[in-house]
Image 1 (tube, rainbow, N blue to C red):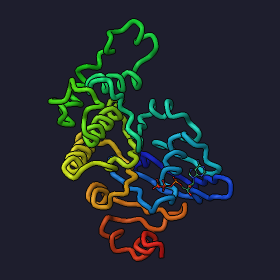
Image 2: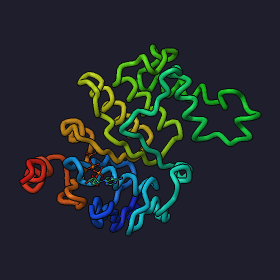
Image 3: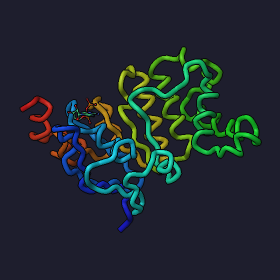
Image 4: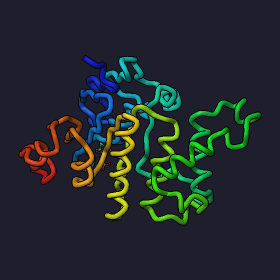
Length: 248
Ligand SMILES: Nc1ncnc2c1ncn2[C@@H]1O[C@H](COP(=O)(O)OP(=O)(O)OP(=O)(O)O)[C@@H](O)[C@H]1O
């Protein structure tokens, strides 16, 4: 059997008396698009932050391709091909779309020496242009990122995360605040990127329609525990999930 790209074993994290994540375990296979859903405060972001080294879990282990990465810093995880996007946009509003994407590539690839003595764009312009074309942003290449619509900025944000050529990307609410037309575009591009590059996605999302149409498998958290796991159809009709969302 193939080694899962991500394996989360018994992760726990408390804040004072609040058990935000209560011993969660799951695996993600290479090339999968996994959704992580749950009501507000169910522990999704805390779990993401424990996986990505932004928080130190009280218990448990995280492995990437079988390698224990528990406690590893985000920059070292990047080197292992793990990336993320944040709920908050990370674009620089006063820089053009192209420059934002080149800068993201420099952060991922660039050594100090290469930045000092290499070409100004660290040779990343061609890659950034390809990424811009892929995300259908070519007409906005030279536009300041701050003057784009929110949905367009989300696309730029995704393009920036993908500049590192990650094998696994954790996306934190990619659809949040994005209008319907841009949502369809975003979903289409994520599916195409997954199909073309075999990149694995784990997606936290509140927009049910988006997550159900994007993901092949969904895990549901409530009060720090996994309460259900299955295909979108199985999750839609799961009474425990319906009760958790209705506060039952
Ligand atoms: N830094 C923190 N300090 C104290 N409590 C926290 C902290 N971060 C999260 N919590 C608490 O842990 C629980 C889980 O929060 P978390 O943000 O992980 O949930 P979530 O499912 O991501 O919620 P949302 O969907 O609203 O983003 C909540 O009760 C929250 O108040």
